[in-house]
Length: 298
Image (cartoon, rainbow, N blue to C red; front, side, top):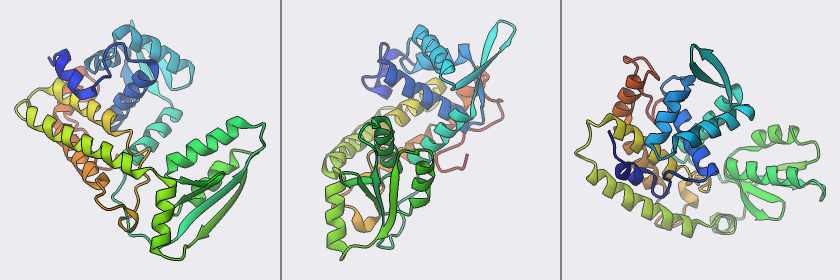
């Protein structure tokens, strides 16, 4: 069994006693990994076990899962004395959106055009304004000016779908081109803080390489593979929400995002088989099913 020090290496400071937002995100990471192996439901006692392996106290998991059920993330049924939690369509949607963002494809060739969103929201409707900013950032837009957001990708249809759910928001959706590549790179500098992000990528790459060397001899430890896989996703997941995934033409010199992404995917795949065996032992999936890797469609 993987000891607490080994689990601690996976999640850094995210140990027993982690605050609720962090614990909640770890639970979603576990559910996402279970979903990738084809599990749409999980026994509560198993989810509690899995949470404990990555640093969430058993009682905290039970309380958090009950709260998430009230929020519509789970449906529950009983089999004898056991509670079985099923993922709701809402949970499936969030997990799929997260999967697409975390395991997104390599940056594509750019055609030189920008998606431009200009919005106006009544001053009294702060929730709508905050949701717009949050969702635009999630999609990969950057803030060029107040109420003006841009992305080098064709995302206006998605923004239109978002706008249809926000009756108080008036959106102008445009496609634009700048005067040239120098102007495009200036837009990037104004919209995203990439220097600080690149430093974090460098630290992630160093840590992951050291961890890979340190754990090279533990390939047969199935619980360790699970813990490392969840910890890896949890550590990496902060990057896709801040990194717009810029095409090569717009990336700053010395950009490490693509290298970090490839190392993450390689490490995620190395841990796949051991994690699958661990899920099978706990009854999450049949023993004959293999875990889905980051490169495989789910």
